[in-house]
Amino acid sequence: SSDGLIVSFGEMLIDFVPTVSGVSLAEAPGFLKAPGGAPANVAIAVARLGGKAAFIGKLGEDEFGHMLAGILKENGVSADGIPFDKGARTALAFVTLRADGDREFMFYRNPSADMLLTPDELNLELIRSAKVFHYGSISLIVEPCRSAHLKAMEVAKDAGALLSYDPNLRLPLWPSADEARTQIMNIWDKADVIKISDVELEFLTGNNKIDDASAMSLWHDNLKLLLVTLGENGCRYYTKNFHGSVDAFHVKAVDTTGAGDSFVGALLCKIVNDHDIIQDELRLKEVLKFACACGAITTTKKGAIPALPTEKEVLALLKE
Ligand code: ADP
Image (cartoon, rainbow, N blue to C red):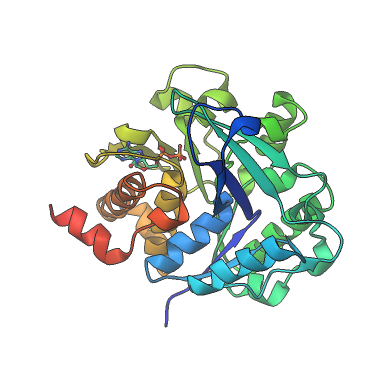
């Protein structure tokens, strides 16, 4: 198709989700394997909506690594930028579903293959062909994937891609909260588009008030669009010239995993061929309404990837 390519960079892993809630990991009678990792979810969100997507990240040369690459390909996402590590294993996460509905994660990352991606292993041709380059920040935590991350961003930017950043804070993975904040803020002014959640806004500003002043304190001059997602309260948007909010859709949410990734994938799909949409408030609001509809649909089914909608499903919700 004539659609511009969206390259999503970072980690892909398998969540082992217990078949029952409210028990400890050791007491779980069984687990379901749920593929995930925010950047991989975004790539699949794009492809499911009919966009052109590639995922870049390292997997282990093991059963799980091949399973994940297969899931990307089945969903129409290019896996051409995925190296396989012969020694290290694919990243895994063990989830505890607490009785109150919250989730806790325990990670197998000591080190996992995704952390071992080196700058030399980057598929530069693929990165240079991206119209949008999207990334998270878990790959900033350790070397060598940190250097690979920084190089990939630079190559994409030099080739003219729009840079999209979702910090995707997973605090337990960082050595400390200060380190997380420092590293996230170190690359803050490289992005054109940044999406954070209300929780991340609080974390980054140290201010527990979710308001415009707090969001605008994170503004930087190179930024084109800052988004704050608010779950069932929709989202707020900030640009150099205007700001406002878009309401969420009323749906019966059963599992919010992947809603933010679905929202980002939808946004990127709609702006990849025309980055100027961001400067036009009416058109931007239409795009964000579409993205909120995507996020809403994703909450109505269990899991992240299985719940990501097609364009047809989104248009049906928009028509209601
Ligand atoms: P994140 O996963 O990054 O925390 P959110 O949970 O805020 O992101 O979800 C992203 C978007 O998905 C929201 O802006 C909203 O439009 C939609 N969404 C999320 N949760 C719900 C919900 N319970 N009901 C309706 N829409 C939702």
